[in-house]
Image (cartoon, rainbow over all chains, first blue to last red; front, side, top):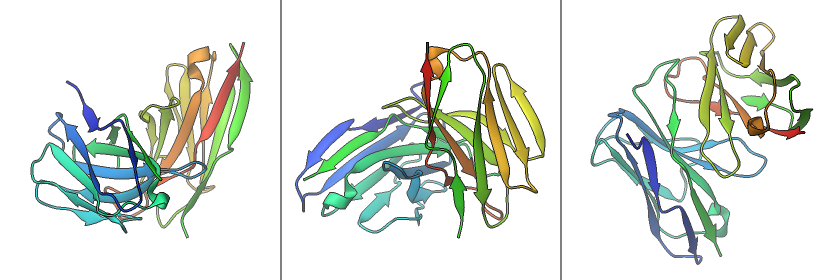
Length: 114
Length: 111
C-alpha cells in the first residue's frame, strides 16, 4: 500500500496563477483533510471531507476550494495564488471520525508564491 | 480561545532521556496525540492518550493529566534518528475530526 500520496512535491507560482494539488489514499478511508504548515505555527486545517461528495470548511479556508469526487481522491485548488499562501501543504486521511482515530499524512507539497 | 504550548527547541545527548512537555487549553477534551515529524517529511503517529496516566510503547512513553491540561512525551535511550520535531495535538470536546495542533518541539540529539 502506498498510503497517502501527494502531487506535486514542489511548485513555484506567480501571484494570481492557479493550481490544483492532488491527494490520493489507498486505505479506503472515509475522512480526508488538507492542512497547511507554516514556521512557528501548528498545522492548520483548511478543508476536510467526511466522505465522497462532501466537503466542509476548516480553520483557514479563504482562498482555497476543494473537491472529493472519488473516495480515494481529495483535491485542493488555489484560484488566484497570493504570497501569503506560500506554505507546506499536507493531506491526511483517517478511517472514520472518532475520538481516537489516527490521521495518516502524505509527504507534503511545498508551494512558493512569488 | 484554544491553544497548545510546547517548547520550541530542546537538545539532548545520545543515550540519555528527554521529556517534552505540552500544555493545552481547549473547549472540552477528547484525547491527545503525539506525532513525530522528521525534517522535510510527513508527521507520523506516536501515541494517543485519553485517560490520565502513563502509556508506554517501547522507548517512548506518553503521560496525561486532564485536570492540569498537561501531557509529556518521554523518550529513553535516545538515538540520533530521534532528532525530529514532536507535535502535540488535542481533540476538543464534541468533535470527531478536529485536532488543535501545537507548533512542535524540535529535538536535537548530540553525540
